[in-house]
Structures are given as C-alpha cells and as structure tokens.
Image 1 (tube, rainbow, N blue to C red):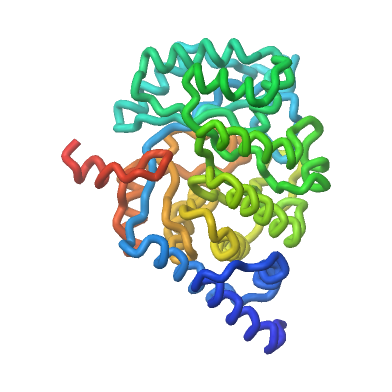
Image 2 (cartoon, rainbow, N blue to C red; image 1 turned 90 degrees about the horizontal axis):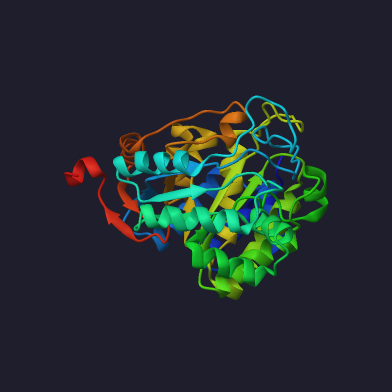
Length: 370
C-alpha cells in the first residue's frame, strides 16, 4: 500500500513535471514505484496538451522490411533471428527485386517511406548496403530510407573495418535518410550483457546516434522493457536518452514497447497493460526534450494503442504493412490506415498523416480524395 506522504509527493512531482519542471532520476523512480496510475496518466496528458494543443494525432504510412534474419548477436529475447550457418528452411537474405516489390506495394497505398533493418549478417559488408541503397533510390527517387539501427551500424563498421564516421558518411552518400532507434533495449550494460552475446554496448549505441546527429541525420529513441531490467534500469535508460538529446537534439520521437516472450530463449511473462501505461507516462514526464511519443499498438493491440493517447502519446506510429520480429514471438496485431484513423477518432483526436521528421502531410488518404 502506498503511504499517504508518498502519494501526495507523487501527485506534486507529477504536476510539477507536467508544468515543465525537469524531473530528477530519483523522482522518476519514485513515480514508477509509487504513483497512482490515474495521476500519471493525467500528468502525461497535460504534457501532451501543452506540446500538442490542437488534439492532432499523427501516423506514418510505411513498411518494415527485414532484409535478412541471419544474425550473430544471439539475443535471448528475439524469436526472429537465425544463426549464421543455420540449415533451417527459413534462413534468408532478400534479393533486391523482392525489396523493390515490397516498396511498390507500399507506394500503392500512399507510403513513401520504409524501415529497413535485419540481422547482423557476418557476410554483408558496407558495399552490399551501398549497392542496395543506390539501387532503391534510383528506382524510387522520392523514397525516404529509414534504415539500420545502431547495433547494425556498429556491426557493419566492425565487419567492414571502418571508423564510425566513415561508415555513416558512406551510408548517407548511398541514400540513408534517417536511423531507427532499434536495438536500444535497456541502455545499461549489466542488462545488455545478459540479453545478448554479441551486440553493441550502451556507449556504442549512443555513439552511433551522436555521430548520426552530428552528420545531420535524425533518429528515433526507443526502449524495450519488461524483461530482466529493474525499474531503476528503466530510469537510467531514460536519463541517457535525455542527456544525449540535450547534447544533440537529434531524436524526433520516443517509442517504448514491452518484451514479447513467446518463442524466445529468454521466456517469461509479458508485463501488464497498466505497467506499460505507467512506464510510458513516466517517460513522457521525464523526457522533457523529446516532443513526440509513439504508441505501441503492435505489441499492445489497437484498443490499448488508442487508450495510450490519454497517457501522453501523440503519435500512432506506422501502418506497418509488414512486421516480422514481434510476430515471430507470437504477437500479431494489424491495422491499415483506415483502422489507425478510426482508433484515433474514437479516442477523441484528429488523425493526420506525417513523415519521419513529423512534418504533417494531411488528412487520411480516403478523406483527402487520393
């Protein structure tokens, strides 16, 4: 049971954060541990109202394309990857023609962006990606290529024997437009070392983002929670994101989602919806320098995706015409543009298409007459 003093302290801290006072890590931890869920939701919603007073909720039409499932990171929480040298029937590297066909299908429904990421394939070096990116940008000149998470870029740097700045410069020259925030999990190495055998450290993840921002790329920030981390680990993760955003200002949005245990080596039980909403609300209060917060309807389902709009979220993420990683863990939720727009309206907001940089592109296509 929460002590009366703790409850009143939580209410005061949450309200002050909603009004713009920066939270300390100790205060964020107190809110995670002790605050009433309704209090957190109301405070996070006040932040959303302050930053986005017009009650518009955005989304992007794009597609997740996983170009390979071969990976030597060996993440215990991942049901998607296949080990290098595996003789499993479903091991693959997509040929360029298959990727182009997926992009054409995205264009057919109004999308001009893809999220391209995959496993850490030991034989795919930077020239493979340069050739692919140039081909895609030649075939689709207006394509926005949101690609390669920091662990992938760290892996690519190492197997190609390049420096990080040179790796990013070459990828940008070939067509890279922005970087997704995947692979962050929890930015605490004692956690990361238990989750994966061969993956970028916390400092390496942050270094990729820092250098990308220096080179003019924008990116998203993420957190996957609800596995082996403590509440203090979650707060430390948020602190490191906030510190880097203070330094560079390069993150366009924060995206948090819960660990999906199905079919994984790590196993366990998914955290509750209340825990998801609590964590996201505290993140909204703590990350006072990241303007946009995205729901995770892909892991939580459309109904909770809509409900989270009352907990500080202002973006529904992607139509995600294709998703392979979360679905490999047995969690499958699908929504097209009409479905996303309906969820937004049902929650009392106005749906609006956007791009990766959160520039608004207009009403849903069926309303715009496209």
